[in-house]
Length: 259
Image (tube, rainbow, N blue to C red; front, side):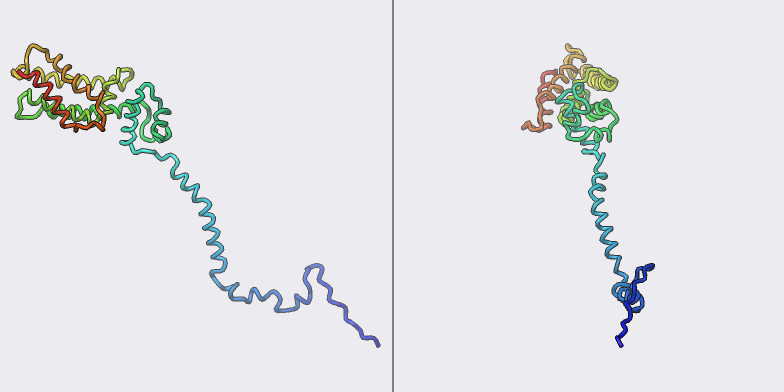
């Protein structure tokens, strides 16, 4: 009789699984049985770590950019110094904040990080020199053990040194015309300094140290006309040190004024 052949197993249409494969207990268990796959704690962790590293690398440039955004290009003191130079070279009225930022090589936001307005920047620029000048003259005029003429000479000498040290600040002070509240305040401070010098001159005349045929006001103007003229020609590259320049000014001025 013909040999009967059993029909081939038909796939379970509902599950889509081959019955032979489903019946085989080893099918599908290799991955579960493989300890390197199922039990190794590092499997999956490395991939997670790599993904985190990739994400961090992708976000790092944006984080650095955010850190730099808005940071000032100069510290406060350097900004004031640089801005003072710009005001002197271009004129305060002719310098906008846009111009100042461009000249300084920074953004306006970097300037506003330190000051609220151009007027505040002008105040800070002028105040550096005038405060140092006022303090020096006050100290010299109050020195004990010296007569009025000696104190006057010391005050003039100190004024020259301060003017050179704060060259741009004092230059800016001498150029203000009272066009704003800040400039009016600066002019008032300048008059107070003149008054201190004038008082010393008057005292020296009373003591007989200076000739009396010139008024204290005229002598004060002549003295500080000479001192202030230094702002027009002095440059840091000038080959004579500030102390020697101060000696020359006081010598020329007082040798012609002493009795």
